[in-house]
Structure formats: C-alpha cells, structure tokens
Amino acid sequence: MSKEEESSNKIKQFFIPVLVVVAIVLAVFVGSLWQRVKDLEKGTAVAGAATGATPTAAPTVDINSAGGVGHFPVQGDANAKVTIIEFADFRCPFCEQFFSQTMPQITTNYINTGKVKFAFRDFAVLGAASTTAAEAAECANDQGKFWAFHDYLYKNQPDESNTTMYNTDTLSKEAVTLGMDGTKFSNCLNSKADDAKVQQDIADGQKAGVSGTPAFFINGTFINGAEPYSTFQQTIDAALK
Image (cartoon, rainbow, N blue to C red):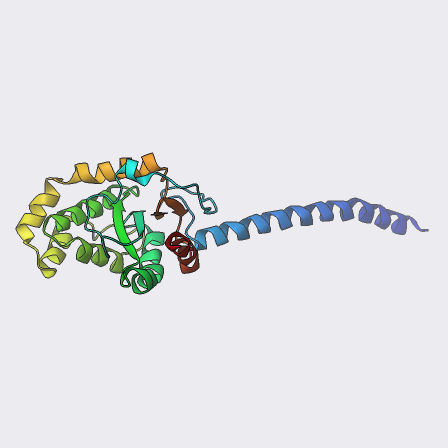
C-alpha cells in the first residue's frame, strides 16, 4: 500500500464516525423542529410565550368555583345538558382559528339543536391592545351587543403584530355601525369603565388553571388549544351520555 493510500484510509477512518454523529444530531434537530411546527399548527402555544405544550385532556375542573359562565350572555338553551366555557383573547390567532373553523360546526350541531350552551370569558394576555379589545367588548355588552362585537373582532383580526385597529376611534365607529351609541361607547372605553370585569375574568381563568388561549371547559373537562372539531365532538358526545 502506498503512502497516499494509507493516508487516505486514515482520513476516511477519522471522518466517517464524525459524519455519522453529525447525521444523528441533524436527525434529532429536524425531528424536534417538525414536532414544534405541528404543535403550533394545532394552536397549542401558550399565548405570549415562545413555546407550546401538546394539549391534553385534563381532569374535570370545578369551573363554577372560578366564576362559571361569567357575565356575558350565553348562547344556546339555558337548560342544555352540556356547557362549554371558552377563555380567549381577541388578538390570539389560534382563538380566531377556533372561531372560524370549529365554532360554526359546534353551533350547527350542538348549540342550535339545544344540546349545548356556550359562554365566553376574557383572557386578554397579549398586551395592551388585547386589553383594549376586551374592554371594548365589555362596552358593547353594556349596550346589549356583545356577540355582534365579538364576531366583528375575530372577523377583522389583523396579524398579531398589527395593533392599529385597537383604538377608541376605530372601535367606536364599528360600535355605531352595529347600532350602538357611539358617544356612550367611546366614553366607556376611554374611562376603562369595565376593566375590572376583564381583570376578574383573567383571575378566574388562572384560578381554573388556564395559562394560554384558547382554553375550554366542557362540563368541566379541560381542553387546551384550538383542537380540531373532532376533539370537541368526542368530548361533547361523552358529556351528553
């Protein structure tokens, strides 16, 4: 064997194990990255945090000890066997995902059929603009227009980095469009008249174990994140038995 061949073999013997180790490290990294993407797609990220946890069904929670259905009007038959309580942030993209993709199916199959009643609670945790949105919804509720304003905020939700619509002028104009007294609405929003209600909802959510949005309690069974409709369907059907 020539010196050149001997040298080449030594180089191969050195680099092959190194390449194997590098390949293993890359495989682990890619796998971790892929799982992170899947978690984000399912809406499992904690609001305001950089990481998320895979949503899992938690033990039943005594949600009544944390304010129950809260103070907003409840959708559906008051005597429905199943109660769904959502804690959400109007600026949370995963909350909008639930609103646009899952809620219509729940409404059609369960709320409109008298099987489920649905309640909304504030969990405004994405900064000052989120608090403004929640307070605006409270002001709308004072004039009997909560659900109309709730729908407006989600249907017009901008990118999370864009907070330009969350100001008194813009929100008051929409309040007028929805049939509210604009002056009364703007005075309510500017004075933060209903901020205590927003803060109470957040405190109740934290007491119930909510740490991110959206979060749901179906007859007390906790669902964390914008899970697909099938997850809600399975939990609701179990509660109806």
